[in-house]
Image (tube, rainbow over the protein chains, first blue to last red):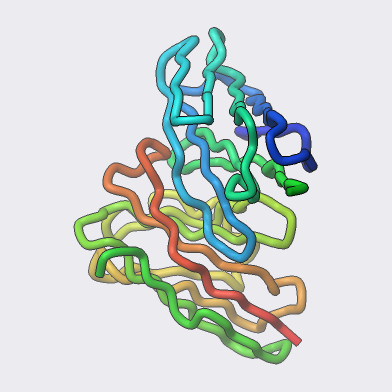
Length: 109
Length: 115
C-alpha cells in the first residue's frame, strides 16, 4: 500500500541555522500536505501542494513538490525556537491521508 | 464548536476492559478520521467516515476495534478487551472534503493507557 518515508528522523540545530526535511512516496501523489506537531500538541496543517514542481513559501518556510510528484521537501531558513516540533508530510492513499513518520526538530537557543 | 473536540483527554484502564473514545467534529465536516499515534511515530490511520458510513476501515488492527458515526456527526471509537499494546494517543480529525484531499483538522486527542 501507500507508503510515505521521511528523513531525517531527528535534527538538532543551533538557533539561526537552516533545517530541511525530505519526504518520499512509493507512488505518485495527487497532492502532498505538511503538518507541524508541537511537543504535547496535535498535528496542525501547514500547507497542501498539488502541482508538479510547485514551490510555496510561508515566511521562513519553503515547501517544494517534486516534478514527478513522488517527493517533497520543507526548508526552514534561520530557525527560531518557535520552530521546535515534529514535521510530518502526508499523502493521499485510497480514501485516507497517509502520514510519514515525521522529522523531529530540536533547537539549541 | 470551533474545533474538533475529543473526550476523554486521558483514559487509564485495566487490561481486558472496554473503552469508548468520543469525537465531535467541526460542524459541517462530512469526513471524519481516526488515527492512532504512538510516541515518536506518525499518526497511523484507523478508519475514515464519509457521512454516516465507514468508507475505509482498513486500518483497524483487529476485531476488538470498532467505530460508529450514527448521525454523521459525532463518532465513537470502541475498543473491547483492551490490551497493553493499545496504549497510545488516539487522534480524531475532520475535513470538509475527505478522501485524503484538503486540510485535516485534528482534535487534542485521547491518551489511552492500558495497565
